[in-house]
Image 1 (tube, rainbow, N blue to C red):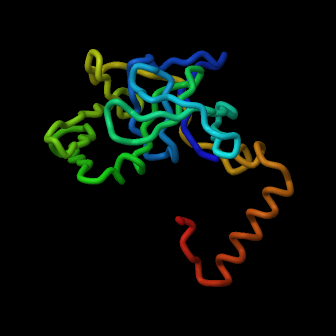
Image 2: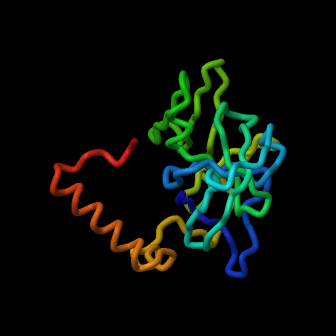
Image 3: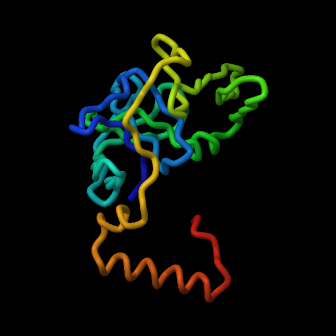
Length: 183
């Protein structure tokens, strides 16, 4: 199960160009729709499939591969809304660093171990994007997007029993001193 942002028009059409990659600190999984950025695409076992929830609805990912740009496993679905790199997954790549200094430039720089840097420029409305094909200009606009959901909206995708079990689990964590939820 994962969480991801959505970038779509009201009628569900994707508005993020297929060549653009978003670096997202709010996504828990890296997901791509552009096959050119993913190699070794393969079907995963039923028990490993990803059910991704977002304000745009639920998307199922049955295929995984390796990103051509960064050495990480990514989910692939050509019907996905965008190419999204989870900042958490990117930050955990050995030898890689991520820098941002807005006093110098409003961009996020992903510094690869081989000395190459990927520059994710802020585009209008606060998204940070990189286009390996043509570059991306700071005046490009992607509109009608949503990153955050209300608790009520998030709960709509779960059954009452699932919500009750999650509430009980959090209560138990509180009682035993808040152990980490990271395995």
